[in-house]
Amino acid sequence: MPPAIETWLAGQSLEIVVVGDAQQIMDLALRSRPRLVILDARDGPSHVLDASRRLKTDSYTAIVPTAILCGAGEALFAEACATLADEIILETTSATEMNARLDLMLRRSDRDTEVHPSTRLPGTTTIEAEITRRLETGEQFAVCYADLDVFKEYNDRYSYRDGDRVIRILATILHDVVKGVCGERGFVGHIGGDDFIFIIPSSAVPEVCGEIVAVFDLLIPYQYSEQDQRAGYFFGKDRRGHLHRVPLMTLSIGVITNSRRRFTAAREVSDLATEMKSYAKTLPGSVYSVDRRTVERPVTVDQRVPFHSAVSGGKS
Image (tube, rainbow, N blue to C red; front, top):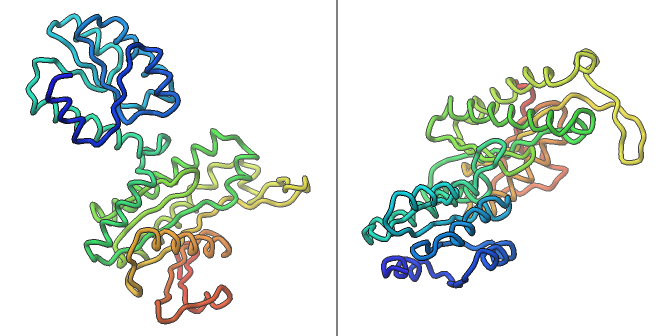
């Protein structure tokens, strides 16, 4: 490898494994999913380019960032690009540009793998980083955990494709309302499935959460058949196979803020937001429930109601 690439690799603190053919690369990538793969196509490029094609064809290894080091020649450059490698580096490239290209390749890879594929919203890693950033800046913020109610029953009644459509609708509502009200101060992330996190200024909680709940309740009936819409429910089976009435989906949002308590780590925020989401799901209808507790006034489960603000249908 050129000295510039060797220096860059040394700076990444990665274990370096050298392999000689495409099968070895595939065996290694399928077992352990490397941080990145650099393919040297300067001598005898056919098997090297084949390795890139195989990496990018397999769904498991396709996300591994792959760079091809090429010699001079437009034909080889075009052939390397056709393998779907993430970066093509010519051996004549300057050391500064080589390092920059490799840095950008890793950054793109991290960004793409941290985004949920169905909603294109940031995932758990980015969510935690955003909470940590706001804790460090000392700003007043609210973390809101949104979760669909009776979503599994909806999937059983209709299909996973209909369920995916509902998740995308919810993602759009959350994004449009949060960004529309808060602009760059708002953040929306997708934990997975029907679980979402959005982070907003504490002062924006009533406006943002109220509008989200109202828009959701307005749109969600249209995701059902006309018969189910008119009835307001459908008959589904529980785990024992017994029929029971399943209401139309509702949305529960648990909200915690740092206005009344001090957090030191994102884990604390996450745990309390999960707790508040679970509490919101015990309330009827679409609601958002705001934690009003302080560290000095801890409450037990049966004492929660006096210390929380629960809002249903966007109305206090």
